[in-house]
Length: 191
Length: 191
DNA sequence: ACTCCAATCGACAGTCACTATCAGTTGATA
DNA sequence: TATCAACTGATAGTGACTGTCGATTGGAGT
View 1 (cartoon, rainbow over the protein chains, first blue to last red):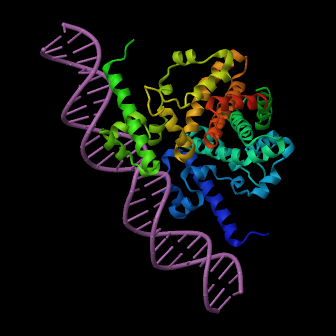
View 2 (tube, chains in turn blue, orange, yellow, brown):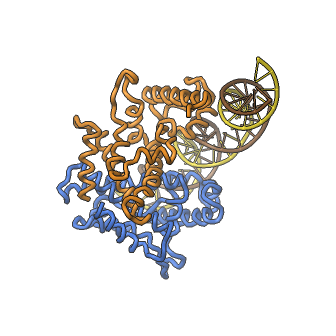
View 3 (tube, rainbow over the protein chains, first blue to last red):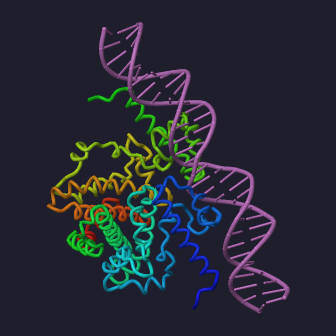
């Protein structure tokens, strides 16, 4: 099903606002940029920014992954290798500039705010908690675990990987994100 | 070293404000209580509430554990059984009314806000992240792990246990918190 | 006790993220 | 093309949080 004009405009506008907001954040710092400034620079009203992103932090966190519905999510998740799936999702933040994204992916530009901007960090955790809730039922089904057990395992997995991403962020040490995540898997397996 | 009058007053005032705030939250809901209302009911100025707790969420989250310095923390942590230590810390939320606390501990009354009030939940995660950062170095020393590995393991542990606490909260099923945490340890060991 | 200083307090005036509402406009559908 | 639903921008809030400043109070030395 092809997306209507309405949805295409919406997606384009969101990417546009997100890019402009990141430009301003990088330049002047997250705290020193008002939502009003972003709206002005993007030539939309503040109302629109809030309608699209909900919160100021949402501008940084918004991600195509958010809009995945259950069917699409199920397609992304590999039941036989859940750890690998989580790893693959996190690994999307790998910077790889190409002809489509000459300056590297927006995803990569967003990472530093996850860890360095306290309010964004708090919201990141909320996002992870949502991921845990979506992954747990699938894990329960495939791993013959109780709901409780699945949630605990899912939490440990998701937050463990997020921690790995943070460690990579603080000290890349020449490793790629994928490599750092592979190392993390080792730790999680020997928990 | 005995605490001076100044510190004793401070602690007493904080407990007083926290108790009154919880009364109001329980009665009218977190969102429907203004910091101004709490200040008024506790007969202090709003300035004082902010000085003590920093944020509205801080009123719920503030805990004696926050004020533990590194030496005291090291005394609480059992290096030979870190999982057990985390478990012990979380288990403090066990409700046990006694002659000192006829209505059950304040800790127990605070739990529901950790999970049910979104903004408090976000702040809870921040608190957990701080715990991770304090535990990781100790874990690194005792477990012969790199800094990175220690952080990942610490994250999985702390957030795993928090998830266990949440699961217990949502479905106590007659189990005590301690029992629920013991079950969680099993899951984490077989991650 | 008395004094002096630093820490604390209350009061006041902001700032800004976020919400609610509503009239005007635009995309989708028949 | 007409109709309707969804979207947009403008406006007027609310309330958490900050900075500052004069007044008060506990603590340490005399």
